[in-house]
Amino acid sequence: MLRPKIPTMPTPTGHVTPPAVVEPTAIVPSVQTPPTVPTAPAPSRPVVQLTPGTVLTLVGGGTAVVLVVGAVLVSMLLAVAITGVSVAVVAVVLRSLLASETKRR
Image (cartoon, one colour):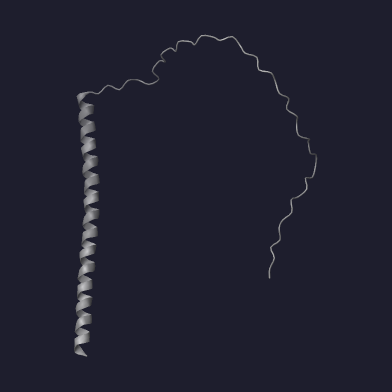
């Protein structure tokens, strides 16, 4: 039988520093400071203003995206349906051929 060899832990070579001792420190409570009132940050980017032209562009772009995605999904569904019908036709033809073969014997 084969016996696996268990690797041994290599011994460290070179200079090894001893672990540092951590001394606990005393916690001194400090004076409570009142919370500061946050100031409103200045806007970092400009506000977008929608004009009638940009609204029409957004609506037209959204409509185009919906139509393209719909056309892709319908074409995929149609491809699956055509594949299913063709497999069914092949199954019927094979069944007919096998049935006629057994009748001849």
